Amino acid sequence: MKKEIRMIVFTVTWIGLTSLSLITSNKGQQSAKQVEVTFISNCGFILQAQDKKILFDPEDPSTAYKRQEVSEAYELMKADKPPFNDIDVIFISHAHDDHLAVKELTEYLKNNPGVKLFSNAGVRDSFRENDPVSFSTIENNIVVIDPGSEGIKELTIEGMRVTFL
Image (cartoon, rainbow, N blue to C red; front, side, top):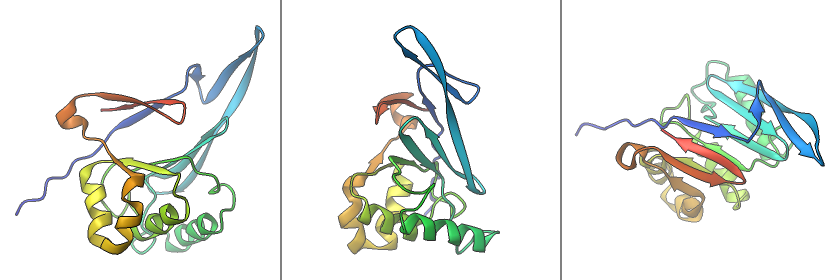
C-alpha cells in the first residue's frame, strides 16, 4: 500500500505585520511591537507576537541531530517554562519525525486541553497509531485541514488570520 504524503503550507498574518514588527494603533498613535522567534531545531520554532505563541513543527528528540538540545526544549515545555509556556496554537506541516514529536505533543495536549493543533490527516493518524488510548483524550485538540481537496483555506484562529495552501 502506497502511503500518500501531504504537506501543509501555512501563513499566519496579523494585520500590520511587516519586517517582524507589529504596528498597533492607540488613539491615532502607532507603536511597534516585536515579534519574537525562538528556534528549537530543524524546522521547529516558536513565534510570539503580542499575546500569542505559536509552535511550528517541533522535531522528535529521539531522531534529532541535536538530541540534547531538543530534549532540553521539551523538558522546558513540560515544566511550562519560557519560552515554551502558554502556547496558543500548534501547526505541523507533515508527519515526518523532523517535523513532528508525537509522544511529546501527546503529553502536552493532554496537559493543555485548550491548545489546538492544526495539520493534515496524516499527522492526526500518526497520533492515533502511536497511542490509541491517549489519542482518545486529545482527538478534539487536533484540527485536520486538507487544502489539497478544499483549495486554499483561510481561518481565524485565536484572533490570527491563517491561510492554508
